[in-house]
Length: 614
Image 1 (cartoon, rainbow, N blue to C red):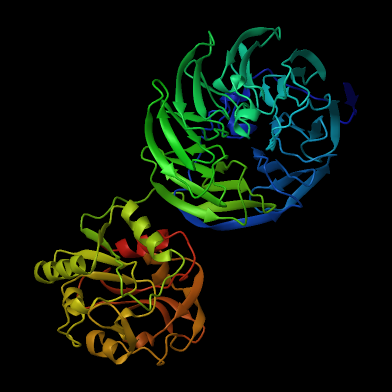
Image 2 (cartoon, rainbow, N blue to C red):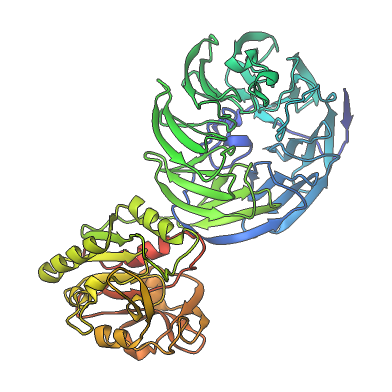
C-alpha cells in the first residue's frame, strides 16, 4: 500500500464532528451515523424535473452536497461536480475504475474511493488531485452482485473507510497518514458508522464489527446468521453485509443478505432483535428517525418501518421491484429508489405513497433532499434533479370524495390501458377517496342531486354508465348531479359520447349526446375528434392547480365553458370547467392525462379539490 501526495493546497481541518451538520449533506446518508435525516424543506409533491445530467455509466454512487455543488460518481470512472441549482458541470475527475462510492466533503476537499482501489482526495473547487492512498487488491469473493464500494466517513479530522483488501482504515486528513488499520479478513463494502467511541462496519463474510475509534482494536464482533451459511447450500449469497450500519439511541442497525435486519447494542455487541425478511436480501442502509427504522428489501420488493426498540413492523410499502436504495428522511416524508426505475416518496408515519417519478432504468443509488429538491442517480447513466412543492398539502375538504372504477366481463372499448386506470383508482384511494362502481355512482348522484351537500367524483374508469345518462337530455341523472353543485373530473375523452349498452359493451361514438345532456358540442366525429394539440396552462389553470403544458384531446370552443384551464395552439380550450350554477370550483372538469403511462396525479387532485368545502 502506498501514499501518493500532491502538494496543491494546504489543508486546514477543524476537529468538529460533521455528524451534527444539518444544512449541508457532506457524506453518505448525510452524517457519520448514517441516520439519513435531512433537516431541510421536503419535496411534498412532484412538481417537475429541474435538470438531468448525463454521464457515461450507471450511477450507483449517492451524492454529497456542499456549498451548492453536488458531488457524485459514475460507472464511467469519473467523479462529477455539478451545480445544484442549474445542473452545470463544474468539473470531472477520471479514475482508473468505476466510482460506486459516495463522496465525503470536508474543508475544501472531496474524498471518495474507486474500483481501482484508490482513496482520492480532490480540491473541491477545481477537481485537482490533492493526494491519493492506494489500498491493497481485492480479496477473493465469488458470490457476485458486488456493486458498491465503501464510502469515506468523516469524524473530525479523521477519515474512516473500508477496502476490498479486507482492511478498515483510519486516516488523519491533516497529515494524510494512516492512524491505524484493522484487518477484517474479508472485503468491506459497507460504509463505516462512527460515534464518540467506536467505528462500526460490516464485512462480506457476515460479521458486524465494532472497532475502537482511537486505537483501532476490536471491541466486539457480532456474527449474523449469514456467517454460518454457504453459497453451495443455496446457489446464491446469504452471507454478506453490504448494508452500512446506522446508529441511534445506542443501537446499531444493519441489514444482511441472510434476509434479516439486525439491531445490536452499540456498547456490548449483543443482539436486541432481528426482523425477518424471509430470505430476501436487506441491502439498503437503514434510516432512523423518531424511534423508527426505515429499510428496503430486495426480492421481497417491499419497504418497511419498524419500531427501533422492539423490531416490530409498523407499516409495509409494496414496491414495483427490489429495493436496494437507502431512504432519505425529510420532514414527514421518506424518499428512496426502486429497481423498476421509480423514485418514490412515502409518508413517514403510514407508508402511504405521496408521489413517484420514473427514470430510465433501475435505481441502486440513494436520494439526497435539499430545499424542496430530490437528487438521485439511475442505472440509465443520468443524475436527476427533481423539483417538488415546498408547502404541505392543505387539509382534505370535508365533502364527499369518490373515484369511479369498475370492471366486469363484457366491457369493451376502454380508454385507458397498461394499468393506468388502476393506478388512478389506487392513487385516489390512498388519498382518502372512496372507490365506487356503477351502482355506487348512481346512488351517490341521486343522493347529491337531492341534498346538494357538495361532492367530487374522479373518473378512473373513463366511462359513463347507462344508469346515469339513461335519459339523453338535461333530465339525465349526471346532469341533475351537476346542477345541484356536484363536481366531476374526466381524464380522457368525453365518455358520454361513447355509447354503450346496459352491459357496458361499446356501440359507437355520438357527440350529439353530449350536446343534449351537457350543452357542450365537441368538434369532429371520430374517436380523436380533431386531433391532439399542445395546450398551455392559463392563469386560471394555475389557480386551480395546474402548471406547464400538456397535450389536449377533444378541445372545445372557449365560449361553451365557464373557465379555460389550458388553451391549445388554435385558441381552443384544451382543459376546462363548465359550471352548472354551483359555487366556484364545482361543475364538469375536463383534463387529459396519458392513456397508457403512470404519472404523478397530484395536479389532478389539486384540481379535483379546488373550491371544495368553501
